[in-house]
Every structure is written in structure tokens, then in C-alpha cells.
Image (cartoon, rainbow, N blue to C red; front, top):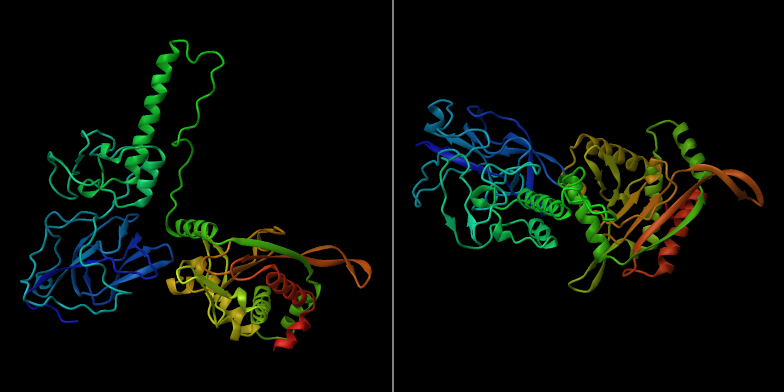
Length: 478
């Protein structure tokens, strides 16, 4: 990286984190204003819908401003930090006038257009963000209006909010389009017949946030309740009147964001786009459990049950490749995939995630066990990268760990199928013509009916069940 000799203030923006991610939440700042940072030194830890990521800064110098407090959500391209490089850094650590955590600093003088800007390292994740940063969004508590007001009327025009970090003053009403960038905010307003032009946004430059819409809905509900009380008279509601319906503000609100929001979006898309069907079968897993015990008794790394199930899945997909595919809706084509990248459901404190075991079809049980263990530990620690959470072609869901027997899995879009495995428990079972107590498991297969018919899906599930009941069947494919 080449530092500027005349000293400049460089603004580092939230980079493109890949995989279609458009925003991230600041989890923890790793530097303070006034700290000296080196090229590619991590300055902030953010959480995306995919994983926790430490973001390195491509500039070396003195941090003169940070943008956003911990817990703030920033869109890609929004400013993260300002770094004084060159002679500006040599002047010593100093906080720019008017700058602070979560506030915009005094704008630094830009170099002439013909003069090249200092180059960064080029190593910041996927890129440096957009050329022009969209307005920053600050978190607003939905249970109270922001300082500028969240539900005032402006005769069909929108009043601009006070600039972040600037002087407080009276802003003149401005005509123009409704300042809403979130489709979720627009949809919420449409669902409740709320005119967004009647709201005053509490975000930067009058941006209307979801909190503004929710506050307006609560205010309207409260106004409706007072009107009903007046109509009922001093004696309260008339005899026989129905109890008031619960307002949208009743109960506890849990934001659908981060991992949980991404999962909600993906599951909803799966249900909308994929015509899925589910078939299931009970299988006697006694011999599979005995085979695993024998493997682990011979010494060496332990073989996990999920690794054996994964090995069975890859063998079944080799016989029924239709289920290792995806649908290209624009081209109206089924794309059968060559390799098996096996996803598996993992429950963490941050929600359900689906890490992906790459090239599972060429791994043996020992290699699969090690990779499952590594990815599970990384998932619980929040260290999975976006690349380890994407690209799956088939998913294995062992919900038996929750103590349930069966389920109807939702396909992990854009895959074509998911195998669900319930708990393995002793049950009465007819074995070799006699009633016996055996270790029984229920297997469920949810599949995309566009890629195959019931015969293919049934054949796949039956093969899996046969391998569970007689692990020696796998020897044919080894």
C-alpha cells in the first residue's frame, strides 16, 4: 500500500461481503478513535446473515472516526472508519472536530480529481463497497418515537430529519419521492393501509424506518381505542360487546434479522417456489448401530453416526442423481450436479445454520466425521465463513437429536431434496419372523416434484433404509 505524502483522511466503507449480502450489524469494535492501525488490520467484527466476520482496513494510519455503535446495522457501502494517512497520521492521534462513535466527522478535503488517491491493500474480503454509500441506518426502539417525531403529518410532504452529528435546526418541508429504501417497510405499510407520505422519517435525511411505521400503527390503534371509549359512554363498553381485538403491538417483538432473518427468507422462498412432497419409512437401525460400535472399537478416530448416514446418502445419490440437482426456472431446465456438497442442519445459539461438507461423495466415514466435527464447532462459535454456509446440493437433517421421531423437512432452496432422520429408539419389530425389540428410526425424504416422480424418490428412500438395516449393502458401492 502506498501512503499519501501530503496527508489525507481516507474513508473506509463496509465492503461487499459476498453471497448477495447487503448489510451487516456491528458486533464489536476492535479499534478506538485515535488508535494507530496497520494495513489489513481488523477494525470491526460484524455479523451478517451468514456468519461473524472480522473486517480488515486497507489503509494504515490513525483512526479519526468510527461510524455506528455496536448493534447498529449498516448497508454495504456505508462508512465504517476514517483513517488519517501520510502527514495527517504523523500529526498524532486526534479526534476530528465533531466526530465520535456513531457520528459523522467533519468532512475531509478531497484530493483534486486529477491526483490519484492512495491505494489500499486490495485484500478486504470481496471489495470496498459501492462508490457512493447509502444513508446509514440507526436502530430506533419501536416502543417510542425518535427525537424528530415518527408520525407527524406534513400535508402530503415529508420533512427532512436532522442531520446525524450536525446542528439541530428547523428543516423546511421537501417535496419528492417517499424516502423509503426497505421493501419490508413498504409491505408493512401496505398491509395496514398506511400512507407513507403522512409520516416523518426518523432516519438520516428523513428516511422512514420500520420503527416509524410501527409507532404510527400503535398511535392509530390507541386513537381508535379512545374513540370507542367515548362512543361507549362513561359506563364503558355496552353490554354484549365483543372484546377488542389484539393490536399489532401486543406481545413481545423479536426482529427477524441476521441468521434468523436469512433462514426465514429462505424457508419462505422454498415454500413459494418448490412443489415439494414428502415420503417416509421406518427402518431397523440395529445393525447400523452395531457396525458403528465395531468401527469405534478397532481404534483410531471415532466414527459419528451422522457420518455413516452421510456416507449412505452419497451412495444413494450416486444411484439416484435426480435428487442431487437444482431447477433453473429462467431456462426451464433441471441441472444435475456432478459433485455432492452435503449440507447438515446445526442448531446454535444464533439459530439454525446449515454448514456444507464439500465433496462429500469422495470422503470416507473417517474424513466425514472429522469435517462434521470441525464445521459443528465453528458453527457454535460463530466462526463459519459465508463459503462454508453456501453451495450445498443436498441436505441431511438429523432432528432426532431433539428427541422427535419424524418431521416433514422444508427443502433448503435451491436444492432439490432433504433427508430427515428421527431418533433411534427401541421398539417392537418383526425380525426374522419373530417379534423382537429393535433399534428403529423413521426416515423422511422431502423432494422437489419437478426433478423426479414418486418412484425415484421412493427408490432413493428405500435404498437408504436398506443400507441402514443392512450396512453390508454399502459394500457394493465401495
